[in-house]
Figure 1 (cartoon, rainbow, N blue to C red):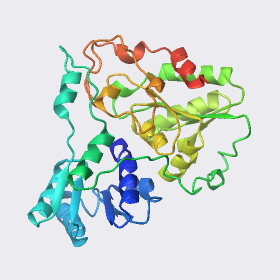
Figure 2 (cartoon, one colour; figure 1 turned 180 degrees about the vertical axis):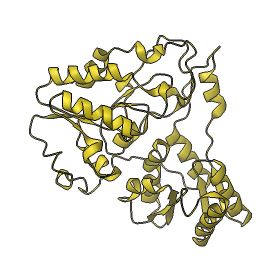
Figure 3 (cartoon, helix red, strand yellow; figure 1 turned 120 degrees about the vertical axis):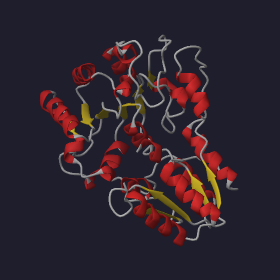
Length: 334
């Protein structure tokens, strides 16, 4: 989800600079929420990989759907097996194609155990920009938010969210990630919640997390601490989550999809990094390095691009050494 979210500022810039260009975005159905408020020259194609487009026959049907658009150029921003098959078929049919360079060698040098080369890699945004440049469409994104025309009304959300009163501080907390190497220990995150609630009487906290076990934890916190709501329990899908995020003063997130979702609605993100590192190029759009929380003193970091590898040390020090008070201080700084 995060990778798709990071395409949004670039596609938006492409659509606005080239208004006569017809742009079709092909992605999984959930991503439609990211592109529904795009300029009118952008449309969306659902890739139903669990249904209609599942397996080899499904991929053939999906290729046919793309081919029927008669594209003049194809930008492969993912460069995985399915996109390679579609891209290659279109290339053989005479369509101009270009695909992303993920700079894997530089990321490997960042994440190896010995002799790390700590050099900032090109961001995903720059990698996407480079693809369109190869196709003859140079762009310079100046994206702010997907909600350009007031489509983010709080009144459209369930009554459990309510109005934002003058003087209130709204903070979101998204404590989970796809891989353990990117997740702050939940006991420590609960301490962050407790400290924020005690320090800020005008505070409301909203918790985000989609899985059954995740919601169970977040609901426990919401019952235990005042002025806390499990947003993912009461909201009806991704679009409503984006609306709520647009009204937050700050989102606290891991190096995960929620960092990128908040970035799409121009909300400040305090991001917590463990096994991964912003040098790999995945910091959210428009986010400040001053709001990145990480242990700079561990020479083993980063050990993984995606946080999916076991800890070399065995003690998960990259996250365990970050104290809750550090996070609270950054969140509440004026």
